[in-house]
Length: 209
Image (cartoon, rainbow, N blue to C red):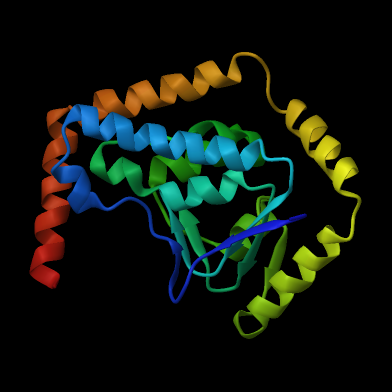
């Protein structure tokens, strides 16, 4: 395998965590869930091969974190990305705050994090986080073409290029920052405001079903 591609189906790349599941978790279960996510993102980021996030719809919360852990992002024009955690009195818990700031700069990152908005693929293309923006109708073909082009590059060289490029934006304290983010989301999860917001979200969804 020379290149990996992660994509979704129908309307979503990945719409984030199941908030109903959140509402029934103990702190221990919540921490275990977050830790699994962190291991997944690290595995993608530190893999020997390049990973492409083929974002074909909503990539929110943990879904956006998966996309940012990838080396490259290809998105269709209807894709939407963002971190809505602030609406639940939470923060991204899998490295989102750190990777976002690295990729688009601190001021843009704060805007995305503070507003909790859903940003278009075109906006993120203009901001430099999306590598290739394609029309919806040609999405699958363009992703395949992009991946095939990368697959023809020497695997050993790509491995070292990825390692060296990642070194340019990380340093020994990066992992400490990721751990602090995880500790913060766990602390907020116990907060009364977060628990009330999660329950409101669940009840709102139940009424609309």
